[in-house]
Image (cartoon, rainbow, N blue to C red):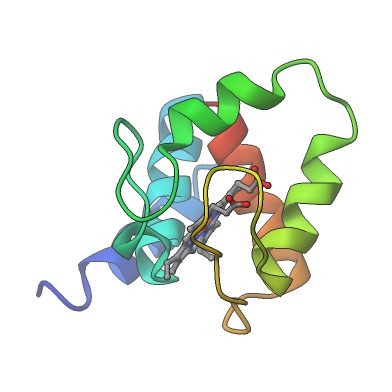
Length: 106
Ligand code: HEC
C-alpha cells in the first residue's frame, strides 16, 4: 500500500483537478511519485530548499515557471548553496510544469 499510495492518490486527484484542495493533493502526490520529496520538503530544507522558500523567492517573477521547469528536468546548482540538483529524466515537460506550478503555490 505504501508503494502504491501516491499513484492511487494521483489517479483520484486527477479526476478532480478543478478543485484547489485536490490540485494541492495532486501536486504532492506527483512530487512524491517522482521522487522529488526525497530531497525536498514543503516546510523545511532537506538536501534541496523547502518549497515554501522556493515559492517566496520567485513570487512575482513571471519568467520563473518556465526557467524552473527546465532546471528541474536538467538539474543544476548555484542558487541555494553548493549542492547541485541532479537531472530528473523520469519526468516529462508537462509534469515538470505541473510540479513547478504546485511548488510556486506553496
Ligand atoms: C538528489 C536531490 C534532489 C532531488 C531528487 C530533487 N531535487 Fe530539487 N533541488 C535539489 C538541490 C540541491 C537544489 C538546489 C540547487 C541550487 O542551489 O541551484 C534543488 C532546487 C530545486 C528547485 C529550485 C531551483 C532554483 O533555481 O531556485 C526546484 C523548483 C526544485 N529543486 C524542484 C524539484 C523537483 C520538482 C524535483 C522532482 C522532479 C526535485 N527538485 C528533485 C535537490 C534535489
